[in-house]
Length: 189
Image 1 (cartoon, one colour):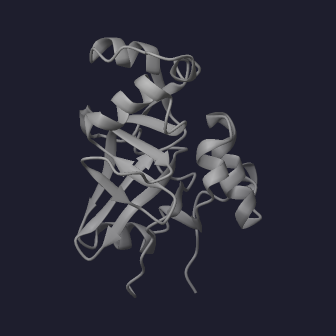
Image 2 (cartoon, helix red, strand yellow; image 1 turned 90 degrees about the vertical axis):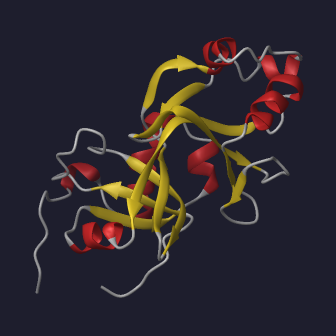
Image 3 (cartoon, rainbow, N blue to C red; image 1 turned 90 degrees about the horizontal axis):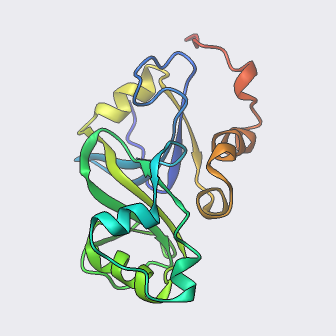
């Protein structure tokens, strides 16, 4: 398969996806290169909000701005390192361990971003997940060739402005497709 870079794209699971981790999932790809790919599932909240997470990691909310973020859901980012937090945020900022996905969106795995959120409420455009989705070299390309995923360039408003329940359908709309009408299998000419 021809080399493609899907960094800053969404992966939309096809209806035939039977893997329970990825069925009906929308994944934001933060990095894709010849070594593999890393993404975060952005439409699967777990039974936890930021207030509960911050309490577990002993990071107290310290400002009115941060309290406004306390009820944000925490997401299941994928089956890899589910005991570790990952924060998608805008703007990129200058944190200890940040992958700049593009000029405005970063993915941070260091605690300092959560401390800043608790202290200052910044960055306020955030999505916190436990775990991530990962693919080895060539694995995602193989899955794409098997019609496991649709791809579309990501839009920050889907990540940061829409409720999680609307993210998958909004990404599908960008392709002009309704998930309900999507066939479970694709043909090859």
